[in-house]
Length: 568
Image (cartoon, rainbow, N blue to C red; front, side):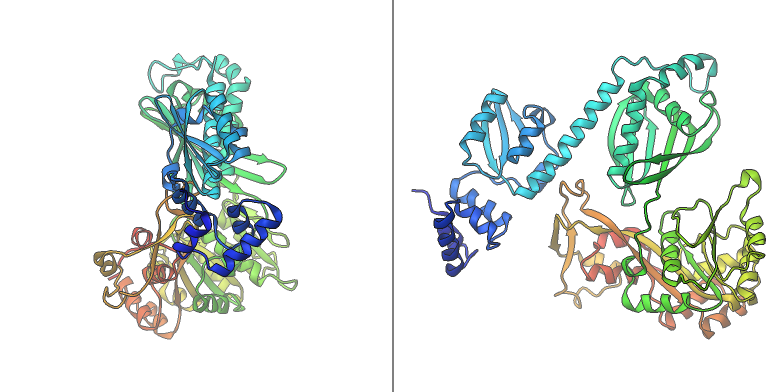
């Protein structure tokens, strides 16, 4: 005889007798199933219910990890509308047996309809509602994208040159005609629109030996999203060139352009780079979202002590604040959040950037354009006559820009800028390498901050685990001291595309220019001397900042080891 659901929950101590009795009383009144009542009253969660039903009915339980990669042929048997309506997903085909995961394995009507629709013997599995719905969203979305690619490419006869770079083999007029046809337009629009929906920052369109690979950079890591036949390479890249006003006949030299995309919800600026390779042209599209700036200093990832230090220095009336890090580390985002923090009616704030990534009201922003002579240097010399109070210089690239930035800081202005360097101490030495005199670098600089972006653990598949002793030692953590500490990582699920990470946060290394630090700079001390002195006066290194995030349960040990180095 089948054990009752309530008895099972009691036996496994998943519910108390009092709560079960409350649910049974409600069930008598509304006539619903006990599981529905328990969920509706918040007495158990959907994972507990699915596990209990699996035991009660003897139906296999399917977890999130099993629905990450499914049998695409099985998916095609069940229409998307049916899966969404009844929260079921066909995930495996075994001969004439179709394996389907459902939230309610006792729904005979749905099972009968599945058999009629598919003409297969249905093998029922049970799953968690949220997991099934996420899998439905992902896999049918991929199915639609694949179908649209196939549809777009059907009937298209793309021009392929006999040898890469041989323009004599290209009929440019015929190519232009094909690029105006709906299928290729639809395909490129699909690639860009799916990237925007997927939170991608970059699109890579790259030719392989036998296919054209499309990858999106999501949360700082490239992920393969689709492939197209190699013959489509010329058409797709040429369509991108047309959209960005580039020369479709030029295939031997690199080209750069831009595309502006407007939708009812947002505006996106796309920077396009075309690079000739031995297998054809590769296109990289960087997506800059022009929607309202959503970041504040409070949600960038600052620890409280670091936030207080940063706020102290951006409130100063003059001097220079430098943020350093590699490309894509969020330097511009941090500085724009700082400008938003200090913005007021009394100050004239001017920025010079390349490009202007975030547009802000009541801030005068200049986008440089080297091709017409609007450089950082020429823009800043003009801004000197514009009565500025606070200035953001997108990047110090050369001695001319550095000299003007220092001139601003020396004449009573607050200057924000960025520099490419690996950490805070090396930012000072980089400034000196450019040609800035030590006495100027030491006297005008208020704060140097290095930063990195690290991926945060996906909340959908977050689990506790024990890092190895080798990992802890590499992070300068005593394994005995952290025996009782709780560590987390993501095991991979549908929501995070099996990466274990979803979203990003920042790590910060703040070097305040206190008297001991200035003394090292004035006497021309090297990078190691600066770092040692900074650590002595309390600087938290990037790796130590990462360990803080790890102990707070936000970032995995693997991510910290990947994105930071041991400074000793």
